[in-house]
Length: 180
Image (spheres, one colour):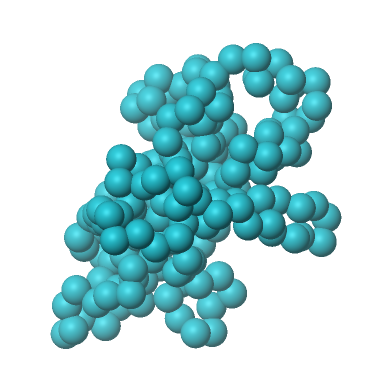
């Protein structure tokens, strides 16, 4: 059901012709949580990482077909349960990022190797975030585009908006592959 909702959202908002939802990660801002909010500024795929992930998801033959056209990886993020009060998801405006700010980082998994892009600090970076997102709010952003649309650097922000509110941040991020 949620996959259908995400597919409809991306078909409508980015005019995707095809959507593959391939990962859902629930993150909880709790020291004992299995998956905590990511507090390193990054984008989820480098060029090599995206090309390999395309093959991992679609297989070599279908990936080769998709690679001839325009495709992208898009992250869809929303709160679960309560309004976000702590560790909101922040973004760096792509126009404020210099090419040399990106750093390639290898991710080693038991069954595969991935590669993401970290972002080195730069005083020119412009940060934005949506204050007090509710489970009815959703944000989607580019994490790789084979036609050159910029990736969006993002991270959980170490901040609490209302010190009198003690809800724990819980969110779901869904990684998608879209074909234009």
